[in-house]
Image (cartoon, rainbow, N blue to C red):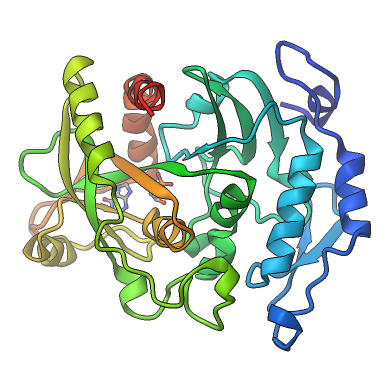
Length: 339
Ligand SMILES: O=P(O)(O)O[C@@H]1C[C@H](O)[C@@H](CO)O1
Ligand SMILES: Nc1nc2[nH]cnc2c(=O)[nH]1
């Protein structure tokens, strides 16, 4: 989709973004002074956009920068109402954003200071519109820490923006390798709990000075994946005849897939599926009090035998995710309908 299409008003139900507002937003000072003005090391990121122009410095660790950026985004679109539901589309769920009615699309390249996606299958658009009659915002493409030098604060910036724009419930999906022997290609796994491997060794989006306006310093994630939502999703999967299990998701740092010994290790830990995303986003969502529902598309099966040659590839992941896409979109539409 070209920038020109986006700037035109209401073509095929896609209404305009207003890039001049983004520039006004910059004029209003998207420049960090640090937390409460006394955080000297800002870690501000100068982002170069696709057109080669350098955009604003946005410090993803700075609360005021996040709020200003959220307001810049709000002014780039004509919001019909506050989006109370946010969706982070993992591999295989990207088409969901295309189903939105009365939709407005903001490419990440047009958002000053926003990170860019680099993983095939992640388009890089912020999309607002109606899904099952509810006003939602979708991240059509997410930020994996391995793409951004393990800067987890940068990768979770959109969650804090969602929160500021009104999101109360977040639906998050991913593609994952199944390691529970009951799982098959194309199954769905409702995430019951997670093991956030990078977080366990200090790569957490909550590391560093904490501005209390972001939320608590110490965040409890004992109930990260809302039980009521999980029960509702299981019922919907039954009604829709979708094969869905419930299980534990492990996030590794990636981008390499697991060795057979690592697959064995995760099995011993009690995990059911392995991926490279989600936990950082869920951690930040919980810090700001957003209710979370998460699920995985099982795109490959983890192999724990070094004498058996089973190669995993991103192409295979995308292929299976694509096959499961229609099912996954139906699943999410029904969940949103019931929220
Ligand atoms: O965004 P998700 O978690 O769906 O992306 C998947 C997992 C890895 O980042 C990558 C590996 O194929 O795709
Ligand atoms: N870490 C990891 N991520 C994945 N994403 C999709 N499949 C896999 C997998 O097998 N391992």
